[in-house]
Length: 405
Image (cartoon, rainbow, N blue to C red; front, side, top):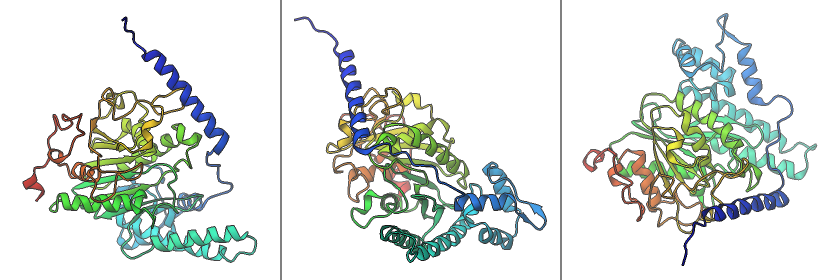
């Protein structure tokens, strides 16, 4: 019998399947791109006020200046002047990379209080429909929750569906920093969930922080739940393209370059968040040592080496995750490239055997979360590789069990 290579035919069928999937999504969900906001948003108004403002007769620096320039500016101020700026321009300061982390927490508390009061009034606005009043009530309660004792809000924007980032741990003093990058349908309302809490950014980061503290009690860690980008809404065209990932990658890299200290940073990217991390990988600062993806539809690259990053690239997917059935290719801007857990891609493949479904990777007690935690604290010797990728620890050095204790 004569054998022949069927890969070209397979690729054609996969491409046709990808297009069919997109056409179905267009027909059933429509174009899901976020529409541009009309008028000036609260954040834009705060930034504009900053740009036209002054302190003791001196102009304030450009809010888009490099984080190092802004850090020098805030360092030159007295504590009283820093607090004055946080209260005068809360959204601007609360989202300003380069501002001291505690000052951002303070500014965002002020901004959240103001946003809560706005939504409280809208709840009783007779010009709104009952559904609009209910939506205002949901937002008001979310803002009130973010104002809870001990919450450390690093970024906040109430515009549209909203953006937010929250810190677990002492970020300025951390010896290891982890950033959780979530996927589709992430916004202010879905940031924290009561049902299936570990499928939402807050629960993911909370679980990772607890697991890292268990893995390395002597190591000061901090975890950022980073929902500070406009994620795709639903499995629509936005989710099939890199547009939201490209916009988010710019925001993520600005954050990474502005993080205090010099602690190593690990990125943990779920679902569409892994697309964002793949796009961001080319520009991440050198302190990013690891990029770990779970449930990935692709990283906008055919091989890990083409991400052009010095970070270690890790990937995992459990056997029950529906994402395994998506076409792993990119055609005309649709799709996100090769499968990160495939041997040809070249990532270090981790075990996720005890995780369940597409959103179960951060559930306490799973090997997927344990692996993330070991990477987060730099304990590469303790990660559990996938059964067919036993060399995933090769060439790595990290903390030992004794050092972690």
